[in-house]
Every structure is written in C-alpha cells, then in structure tokens.
Length: 226
Image (cartoon, rainbow, N blue to C red):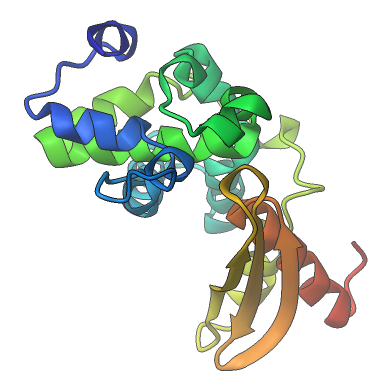
C-alpha cells in the first residue's frame, strides 16, 4: 500500500481510510462481511469532488455564465473523465477485488475505476480535510478549459439540468430504486424525479450510466430530441 501512497503523492495518517477506499464490494461480500467497502466513500467523494471542481471553475472562469460553468463541471466529474483520472494513477492495480470481479476484468472496468477514484477523494478528505482533497483533485484538472471544445451529446443529465434550472422552483433528483445481480455483473435502476413526479427511468451497469439513461428518457418525454 506504500506504493499507492507514492503514486497519489499523499501519505495517510489513518491507513484504514486508504484500505476502505480500495476495497470493492465484491471482495467484502465474498465471506468477508466484516470488512468495509468503498461504496459509502464513493457517495461522499462524489459531493467533495463536485464542490472542489465547482469552486475551482467559479474562481478561474469568472467570465463564464452559470450554464457554461455547469457544462464544464459536468465534463470533469462524469464517469468518462473519472476513469481517465484513475488510469493516470494506475488505480486498478491497487484495488482489492473479489474473485468473480477479478476474473471478469474488474480492474479495467470504467465504472469501477471511476467509483474508486471518488472513494479515494473521500478517504483523503476524511483523513486530512478539504484542502488536501483539493490538492489531490486539482492535479487532474487541465490548466485551460474551453467550453466550446467540449461535447455534451451524451451528457443528458446536464442538458436536463439546464432546462429545469430555468424555473428556480423546480427540483430534480435521481433516486436509486433497485440494485441487483452479482458484484461482477450488477445492474442499477434509477428514477429521475421532478419534484415528486417520476419523469424518467434508466437501467445501467453503473449508477452514473443509469442516471444518464433516465435523464435521456426524461428529455424525450419533454419533447426534446436526444
């Protein structure tokens, strides 16, 4: 695990946070129920990542309006980008996986790497605070971002958010309603709610993918081409 600390250029005060961040649910579920896995850290890391990126963009792109800032943030926190960030630190090599996940290529699976990257962010945040988490995250953010060069064709969540935020009274929320299958072949069902109404449902191999599919369905039902 010392190699991992060298790779991410961070030294843990409490090594248990590091181990938890690297432990996939598939390992904990194979007769090791007492072990913590990285799902809860992933949940926290998603929020920590979002605030770090949002603040960075707010402070460094003062000329951009809210809509374009939202697009930039979405391009940096999406599964595709997190997967690329994870590859830069060879995160897959350090993951603790169950045998089934190991045999089916879990170390290279984009959704697993993206989730683990968020878990690592949370582990650093809990171990040392927001400043250290920010130092870690900003290493992966390009110095210059051009909103015109970023494509959002597949980012249905951002497109839906831009439409909904025109009316400040409206609120959308993504709700995980079902998770099934073995750890190496899970599927997730997510609903997107507009206030209290379900306006889209998505099923995917990761929560993020399911959310995108749900947002795409919502856009279609609202009359927007997808």
